[in-house]
Length: 373
Image 1: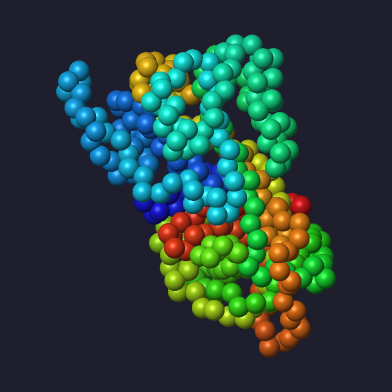
Image 2: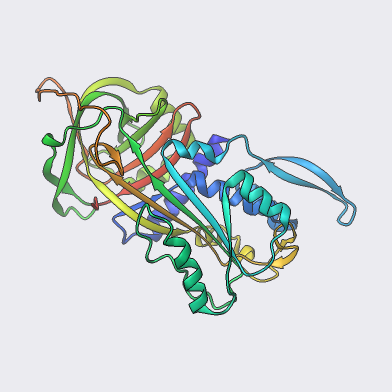
């Protein structure tokens, strides 16, 4: 199942790279998107359910025979839970709905996916704004002032929202005294002074000559979790790496990485960004989920319905201690700079993902064209 989630992550990464060409940094979780879509799948019946199940590459089980339709009804099986995400942060999710939801659907959403439910006015924009703002004001972790959905031109029926807050510690923090400004060259060959931190330690290192990229694995405080930095060769770029990556690369890079003492220089970067899973699904021809009578939502609303949007907001802030950490729990290790230790400068666009090595599972994914901080 982890392979399916990782492949969805890469599909979403490639889509967002093209769609958000103007953004310097894009951050998201294909892992959480997958579980949100599994919940949506639970609410569907008929062709839309088959299409979404195929897209999610579901393992499924038959649950009952429908005499009305003369077919077996089925549900996707998930061998993982959203609990894995809490290794690298927190998540808060809500469904804003103006129509009555089926109790079994609500129970599944609450017990399995930790969703909240908020009633919302279907047509009054001022009331909609008030309802959503009141909820987002409770999200203390990061400022989300631009979450209100665009005017959809239809009644607001079901609006699904995930808030991801990435918070973790490096196993060995960087020493702030060695952080300083260095040159970063963006995708347009423009050079900028940016803040970089220096980490000297034994890191997992892999050189992929096929994809023309170098990968460094930095241990996080929680055993088995890593931050992976994928730096394309000078004559390559992240677009090529993303386009040619697949799930097997994550496993190969980690399992075949060599422990090497490296002087790693990595930029500070931070971002709060919003993405629409709706536009991603529409790109893959699942428009019927977002138009009235386009899909059978019997298991969610008891009949006809539609989704207005599925929004994911992600906040990450990388510094010497980890992400969204103000001070290290342990003292940094003091290393002297040495010409005998190879240097690894992340001084051009790169990929940054958070990885559970025990499950071969990508929990969060970012690509950085220019560091924001």
